[in-house]
Image 1 (cartoon, rainbow, N blue to C red):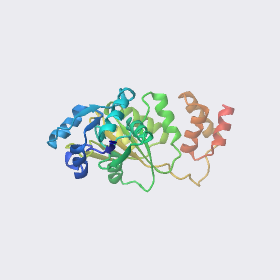
Image 2: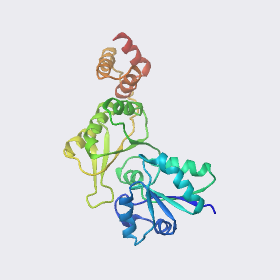
Image 3: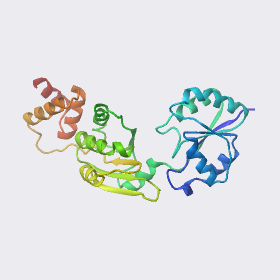
Image 4: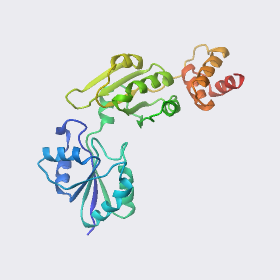
Length: 273
């Protein structure tokens, strides 16, 4: 007998958002691989189900995978995360790849998603968007990641925890400028909030952040066709970027985005500095 791995999206807040199909699958499988079994048991209790669960997360994924592949030889397994779709900012993709490589059928059971929920209410173009997941935790790596997307025109989407929100907003203001942003807090939960404004306005609004956040940021504006900045202005901007610890490449990306100049002009200013 060969089982199927069901990749099941679970509610990001409101339990009523679980699809009927997902509820049925969670009741029919032999085993549920859950990011946090305590969270999943709350959902199962709501559904009056007693399906066996086992933890599968970033800390034990490598050790747990052989057991789950063995379970698939005997029956069906569901993969769930604490909220939303498995494989998005969690290790679920590794289990999916391993199961597929071993010949097991992998089936998506779609449903709630913080990414699409936030895009739907942000008010920015969503025909194309760039998803960043969680940014790096260190200041330098976070800033570098933002610099690398500073020239992208599509809307940007990322996740953030409350204790890092203000640092991330400050890094966004520094690298992308004071763009328009929608900060979506506690999506679908009792205290859901959607703040729309500029990045610096968001910093002032969320003085004491609470809850989980999804940030939707407008894409890079089109370069201005007005009079280009003076060489001295470009050089000053590159000097400031160098002083903040950015590499030559990251500094050029940032300055070219902020001032609407070519990276070649920014590189030339760096060499002169």
